Image (tube, rainbow, N blue to C red; front, side):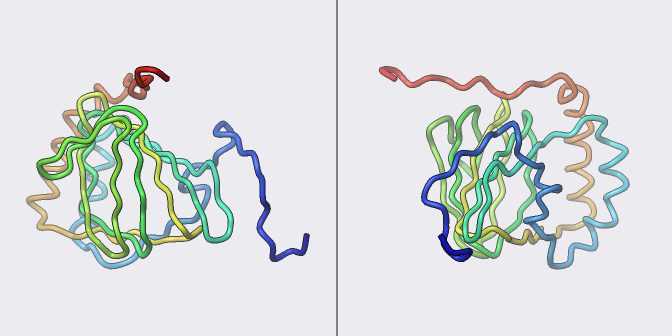
Length: 174
C-alpha cells in the first residue's frame, strides 16, 4: 500500500481516544467579544465541567467525535465549516421544539448555526464528519444573554460534579 491510500480496515479503541483539545482538530474562528469578556465568569461559575468530548477515530477526510453533555448543558449557538451528522446513543436533547432521544439523530450542513440543550439525563452523542479538521464559530450575543447562561451553568455545576453519563437503553428485540 502506498502512503496515499487509505486503510481498508482499522480497529480503534474508545479508551485510547484523545480529548477534543488534545486532538487539535477543531479551531475556534470568528469573533465573539462578548463571550470572550465573559470567560472569567464562566470559569468561576462552574466547578465541574458540563461537557466532555473526545475523538475516537480520525484520518484524512474523516473524523468521529464522542460527546457527553451533562443535564441541562446549554450548547451555544454555533456553526462549523463542514457538514456534521449526529447520532444520539443515550439521553436526549432539546432542539427548538423537538426532543430527540437515543436512536435519533440530525444533520447540520456547512455554516448552518445550531444549538441544543442536553436533556434531564444528559446526552451522549456521536458526531461524524467527512473531514479531519474543522472550525467552530460561536455566534456572539449580548452580555446580558451570556450572563443568563453563566447563571444556568452556576446552578447546574454542583449536580454536574457527580453526574454520570446517561444509561444506554437496548432496543427491544436487540
